[in-house]
Image (cartoon, rainbow, N blue to C red; front, side, top):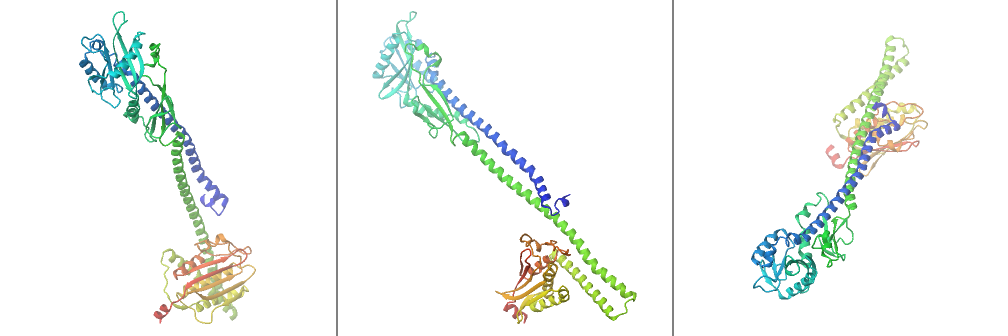
Length: 567
């Protein structure tokens, strides 16, 4: 089937190429289309990851903001506050601090504890830079700050509030303050004591948000295999309080808001009439490498490039394999033609020899002229047969890599004259106009005379075979720049440009004359090329269809050193 498909028919060869390449193209197209789905899925994963991180950070901040009010102020024993049992309260606060990142400064006051001053006492757990009291892990007094805290507490006590929020500025620092007021029982009319905590706004910006953004929880939310996620905290005025990377004031993926409130937003109505105005801050997230579309496109572009390379390599592999298969099939076809042609060329002289030998043997030929004529025919056919056999043997040695020749100094003129002499009868019979241009002096060459004569004879044979209407042969021999060049020019059918490189391949036969078929094995020019290369030279062709051909054999001339060794 392959032999039929590739029998020098471009349409069928193109069909085979289509059959080979079509599945590969379909596979490539399907994979290319699947990258669009991969882009959408990757974008969805990145979007979900970005939003999940923003929601987690916002939820963590809200939890930390409202936790001290209910998990500290309610868990400190109120009787200890009324009695100002400072050591007991200090131990309790130190224990609670492990679970409350915002609990830095705690305060309390009581007017019922016997023998105690009526100033507010402040307790600082870690002694951070924004703490109003100098003492660490014990209570201390700060008269100036005490007056500010007491003044605000009287406002809240006038309306019998249980919890109250305030903002106090002290020594150029702003504090968010939460009160829990305790009244005399059972009427709850007289303020007996209060406790609360203070949060330094600057400390929130400088320390707390940094710790939140850099926490292990955030690190665990990073998406493996993708660009790092960035987090930015933006206040209610649109300014970045803290960010983990580049600014997200411009482009960002997600924005989750949270109330900047140290209380439960769901029950903030209970703080009336001193209900605070809700301020919402935001957690913004984005990817370090840019937008999700940019990241996804970058990843799929790499995969697209990889698939292009894979497709190119696969196509090249298929193309080379198909080309090799085509060449093998064509080579097999040419070998088959070669066997048929050689068989014909061997059978023809054998048949003639047999015919004329039988005629002579029968004794029917009496005339001496006929006897001479038949003897010459038998001799010429035997010579032709010997040439064909020698050519095949030469090709066998070439194929086996044993095409080595014994070299000696020869005169190229003599070799060329001998080759022309062997074709004198054939050229004369075909009315060839032969022009010979050779130097008057010897043209020495280091080579093998027999093989070079074979080269010249093969080129003369081609000129005879492929000349249709104009029978002309011009042979020119001349030394050129340290080389010997022999040109064989005819006015035959010519050779197309695309075939000029192929005619030196084994079994290849060029275009045929329209007037008559040309027999041959397709080995002549292949043997010519091999012999010339073995002599260190090259053979070229200059031709065009309908304008004849010029074959040039270029061989290295015999150097003075070679001539000295020969003498």
